[in-house]
Image 1 (tube, rainbow, N blue to C red):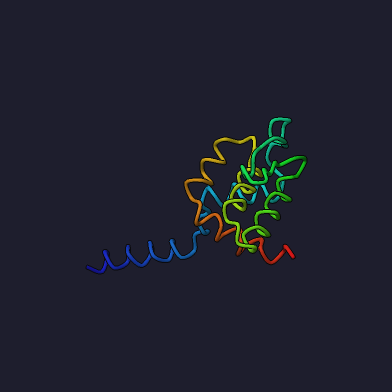
Image 2: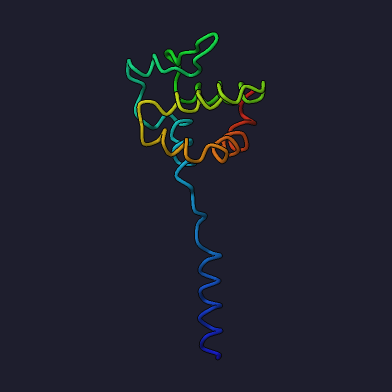
Length: 120
């Protein structure tokens, strides 16, 4: 019994001292914010953020600026355009966009908590 208790305590202490797990969507958002992923190609400049009306295209905006647009649009109540800006920021990385889509509610929550205070 004492051995079992010792094993449980050792495992518990190990888990408490381990670094926090970062979700894949957090890594993707952090990379977009820090502009550490691939820069937008010409086809990303034509990325449709919102179909309209009126239609909104990404243009020459950086990944970080795309996330700033997303935060502002979310605050104004346009959640569709906000998420469009998030996906535009991740262009041309289709895998990153898929990860962000699969975790949409968590993505918005993380974006607002982590970077929202930095955007006026």
